[in-house]
Image (tube, rainbow, N blue to C red; front, side, top):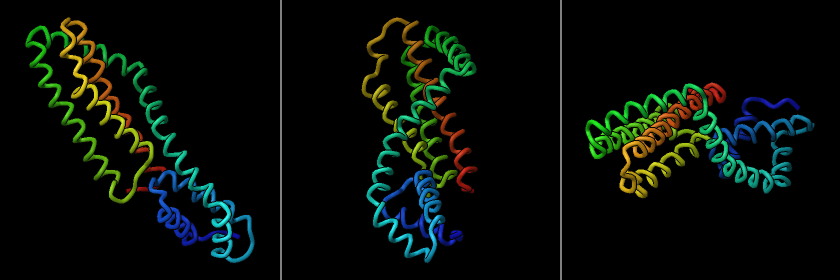
Length: 205
């Protein structure tokens, strides 16, 4: 039985109403369900209801497992980008610039400037997520986990732990600032690359 576009949309809406909020997760589940139903003969709606009655519990469990794995995938993608040659070159160049800034203007001045830069980067990231990806219409698991991880780490490190209060050595404080600024910047880059990929893969304008 060949499924129509309306059948595919019906499956997608059913999963969405059942609590599968992430578009990429729902896409994979819809494809899985559709492939199974196409192997059957008879009425689509009847076959679908029978299939969901038998498999809905398993599908919902898969949804939760996929969401848990999303954060791990996001962190792995971030790590891969951080160890690329151009990222390492950027980090070294940033260290040299920040070291000159710390020794010239002092730690507190550099800290204040970087605080503003971090805030602007995060605001831009959130705005891009909302208006470019369409957060009010769709959510992607990896992007959602990536941005939530970034916000949590930024708050814990820069606001709560505040290593600059514990480090007096200009060299060490510069290493901290260079590493953390690189982390934020590469996060933004990773988010941008993934968002473009998902917009193409899932046909979002």
